[in-house]
Image (cartoon, rainbow, N blue to C red; front, side, top):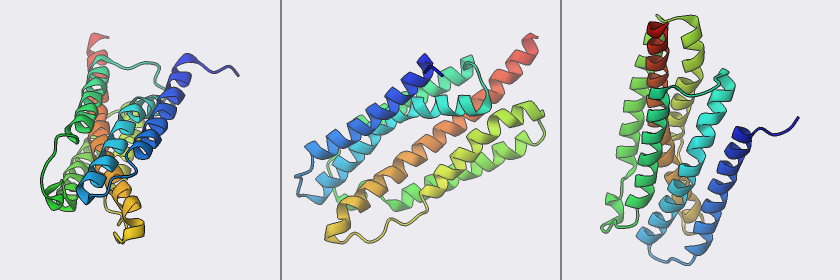
Length: 200
């Protein structure tokens, strides 16, 4: 079966994200200061997330049987992508103490907020049509799954494991951002379906 253009673009996004992550980590491998290392890991993960977001959206579309995105869905995807790009850009100019660099407390707080919003969205979906619930449920589930990732401990930060610990911490932060994006996409899907029903 030949590879369709959207599938090829999604695979290209995944490959580009992994390559960006690997190249940035390799280029910044000799950093010695803790804060510089943390910034390098955050930059590599955030840059990769910018490429992985379109592939994730396309994968969800394939799973839910969607052919194309509605206006609200497309707008939310573009806004989330712009936010992810801004997060990657915002890492570079940071100057300050390592402990103040978006610590674990704010990460867990954001995860709780997104989880609460996802549960509220899921509750609202129970009163909607089966078709709409079927389209949005995988998106809400994935948002909750990404929130759970932020609660998984990354292990100790001993010297030989510090790089892996920083990478895991950066992945958790990016996961929360993508979970928020998925929640926005789920709400946008509800808006698009309601608009389509009104037009018909």
